[in-house]
Figure 1 (cartoon, rainbow, N blue to C red):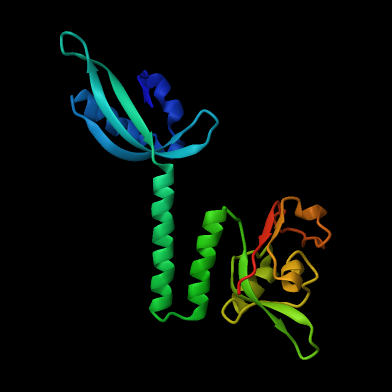
Figure 2: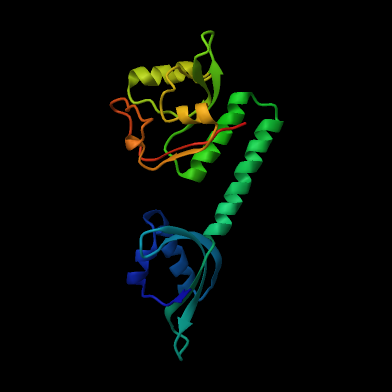
Length: 212
């Protein structure tokens, strides 16, 4: 899209962290220069942030005086996401090939999945059975979900060897019992929801995916 805007109004398109860029861009324009293929982030009318490639050139009057700037912004959000996706996959592959321990590889995978799904927390774990044939979950990788000093200590002490969840009569019991994917956009009303510890951030959405 192409727009010609006064400097006083163009700032509405800038996220706060990108505001310093305007000084650089306007400096280039004042000197009669061009700004081409400048990668940045801008805001849409609804507040959504998008990745853009900017090309900016000065607008001159008949006397060759600079009276404004013309900007062409190309939405490259999909391209940036694809590049980030490829970089993440490459990082996971390198971590695995390098012979790093299992926890490092699974943590790399978890970081990627949480980023792609815009999740606040998550875990990757295996389903085991104890001597009484009771199922339990043991984590291979887990985000820090501690909500007080006690749970923080437990998280740190058991992160390497894996945290064990003996009670799986919860949202992820569906995966353990059926091996199917579960989506819960209202997890608090799901019949598998058994509550949350006080202090833990409210669970808004839940997705569980079996790995074979």
